[in-house]
Each structure stands twice: as structure tokens, then as C-alpha cells.
Image 1 (cartoon, rainbow over the protein chains, first blue to last red):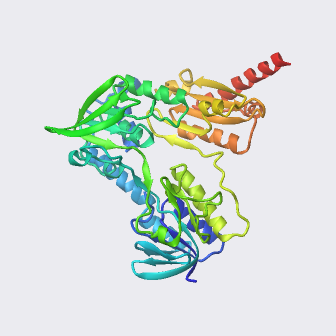
Image 2 (cartoon, each protein chain N blue to C red):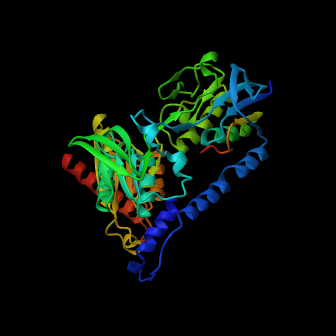
Image 3 (cartoon, each protein chain N blue to C red):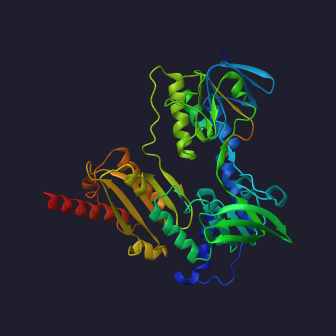
Length: 39
Length: 413
């Protein structure tokens, strides 16, 4: 596996999930089609 | 933009504060510049750097699911153990005859629009519509709001939304409720909209037309159906653990049904990650989700409305404390509004906390903590509040409500 947790989107939900994933010791990636941060 | 609008409103009232500002004005384009600068300080490269510093890999591009353990991002395959879909939402525009030909804006365009329209019709009287209405109104555009529901801010407590309706109407904003949009057409330099109201058909005309009728989930191009992820009208279907119909994939934020609020999204994202990565799963809990609308005055609430308390047959009591008499409200020149507390008479806990007024958003946190920790009204009434603050009104509301509850219980005994 490339990642334990892959998140699509970096808005409030995605960015929050990514940080939580790292806090839990997971290897995390986020995919974002636009600007980082969403709206 | 709202902060610029508020500053300009205060500037227009300079004389009230003993100040003189004889030549005041604004450059709306510079208001947008300031907004852009603030956004750049919080999202974009700054957030990217922060995420990277946390050790998170950032993959730029369009993701498309190939299987329950694989996505393709612009042609590159990436495998994962668990995934979370957090693709958000985009403005939803209902089909209206003539709308595309006439042209319109949504919040996506409005946040970048540098020319202030001298008149604007805002379709949709919930948070987005109300906040932009306040911006345009403050900069002296003629604003007309068209709402399909029987009242604006229909998710808020009726007393709160009715108060806002009256405040806005008295300032010259035209508001139509229970109004259905029929047709749009062009009339020389203006955009015209025919609406059906309880009093009959009305034709509205303005320089710009703003559609703020909610948002829809963004799932285009994700290939959800093919890998078996079920979606409904309001977005991706999830269970109480925020897990989709495919067990390795979770979803959070505006892309799932429920609250479309940044704070709800952040909570859901956090919970989805927790549940995706641990064996013991935690159920999503929406009991205490705070909400705010930066109208003028602001509205903020947590818990249930009085209408919901009635519907659920809860044994409740409400208490309303107006801000008009507070020293701080006089000093700041912001005396409108009230705090309304709804308490459960069986548990003596706060179950709804609603504020309309100056700094409603900041004052809400007391209600959030009270609800989260299930603090009783009797305990809240004992907390000494700062005088010369707006929150003094919240403290007074708790004290008065506690006295009312005590005398009710004495009478019942």
C-alpha cells in the first residue's frame, strides 16, 4: 500500500482528517484538484 | 468583506460617537483585495506548508477511484488502505426559465466581484444570501431578498429569524417570503425576475441577480458508482460511523448529507479519520453543533429551536433577555437583539441557545460549553459574568431563567 489513509479534498473536512490521520501514526496523503484549503 | 461592511457602517455613524468624518467613501475593489489577502494568509501556500510539515504528502490533481483500495490521480495509480472523500460542495442553482440567458452570480462569483451593483436581487434568504445582502446593503446597494420558505433563516428559531426580518426591513431591505421564482428575463440594463408570492405575482428588477439557494455535493469524476459507493440527492450516503457503502472508504463534510458548516465538516473529518484508522468506532454525534450567520445583527445558535422543542414534546421553558439595556450595548451603539435560552425542565439543562445581536458569535461559546458539559441552569446562574460586556446579558438571562424555574417548582410543590 502506498498510504494508510488517502484523503480527497483539503477543505475543513479533508485538512482536519489529514492531521488527525498523522496524529494517529498513519502514512497520509491528500489529493487536491484545486487550491489547498478548499473554500 | 463583512468586516469592511461593518467598519463602513460605523463610519457612517461617526457623529453618534462624537467623531467627524465628513468625507467618507469606499473602493469596493479594495474591499475584495483585503478579502483576498486574508484568504491567502489562511489557505493556499500557508496551509500547504503546514500540511507538509505534518508529514502529509500532497498530490495535486483529479482523483478517480479504480477500486476499493486504489485511486488514479491524473493517470498515476495510488493504493491506499482507507480513504476519506472530502470533496465538499458547490452552489446549487435551481432550474428557472430564462436564468441562463439573463446571467446571474453565486457566492463563487460574488466573493470576487469587484464592481458593486447598485441594485441586487438575492434569491435565497439563508446564511449565504443574508451575509451577502448585508455586505451590499452596507455599501448602499438596493437589496431585495426572495425566500421560498415562510421566513428567512428558516433553520433558526422563529423569534430570531423574525427579529432579523424586522431589522432588515426597517433599514430598507425588501424581503419576500413564501415566494417562488417563476421566470427571469432581461429588461434593458436590468435583470428582471417574476416571483409568485402569497399576494400574487411580482416583477422585480435589479442590476444583478444573486442565486443563494443552497449547495450540492461535488462528486463529479470520482467514479463512485462504478466502485459501489451509493449517493443520494443530498450527497454520499454514510452510516453513523461516516463509512460509505464501500467499507474501506469514508466521507465527511459538505459532500455528505447533514449540516453544511465548516465546523461540522472539521468535526466529521476528524471522526472519519479516527474511525477509518481504529478498530473501535465512534458514532457521529450532532447534539452540539454551533452555527452562526454573519448578518446584521449577527445570529448564532446551538441546540434545538423552540419549534423543535414543541415538535419533540419536550417539557421546556424559554427565557429571552434583550441587549438594549446593557451598558456595553449603549457604548458600542449596538443595542438590537436578544439571547434566548431554551431549557429542559426535567433535566434543568440548556437544550437550545440562540442569540441575535452584536458579537452573537463570540457569546455563543458559553452556550456551547453549557450544552457540551450538560451544565444546569442553576449552575450557570452562579457563574459571575463580566460587567460592561455583551455577555453580561447572557449571565442575566441565566440568573432570571433560574429564578423563573425555581418559582415554577415552588408553585408545583
